Image (cartoon, rainbow over the protein chains, first blue to last red):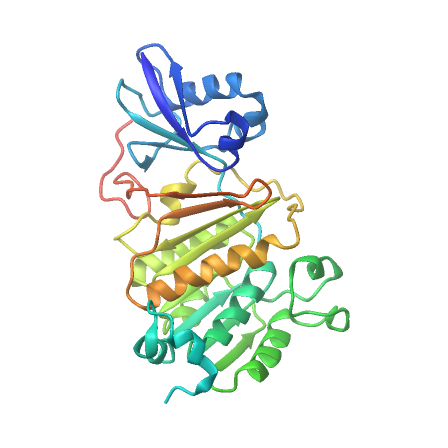
Length: 82
Length: 242
């Protein structure tokens, strides 16, 4: 199935896009989407385990199932320095 | 009576004279007096928040100076909050500024924030932010998260049970790696300025903007409008079934 991902922060710079299209199989999770994204954009590899991902405007865990038509966003990890 | 001090600020229609007078009645608690906290304290004192407490048990270190603007080399080894309290009080004697040289813990946080109209995050730790988030949700005190890393900063105002809480967005954060955080020197000032705007908006009864992400190197600014997570372990109502 085809899904659309909105990207934020430096991911816009890395992908040179606001939204990207990915083809993933049925029954995949948000974690699988992130795997696919990282494979396509290796510069995001260091964020892989900490990426902030949302489904339909809610932050969601990596095991969240994805279905066609879901709105996915990916942004860099929450930053913690002060 | 608002003096000439704020004249230019009261001309801003989003605030006005009435808003300025309202700010003078508010109490902000800033937890953390480093890169973010010291800049936020400086701005909020100058903007006329009536009463400000700054809490931190840390001392000024040479490595703080590249990203702060209040401390000098003469302050190295001294308490951050005591310096901030003294110096900022002399900036604006019409507000009350108090530096509290103590570590914030789960045991004492309530004693620090019980009279707060807003809590301003100047910490550098996720566990402390989760503690702030918890006390905010328990006692309905708004707070404004801010964080910096390398060239990226994030800000999010939290209205308890109305907007996403910190746990809603932080669920994928792993345990701290205890590394020294890289930060471009001018980033905390910029992010603190954004954080102060969200703080003032909350104090004026306005809705915060969502999660703000600013990459100052690539000049890329984003606002993410996010919903509360009903399964959030801290603010959600639903239990997740595995």
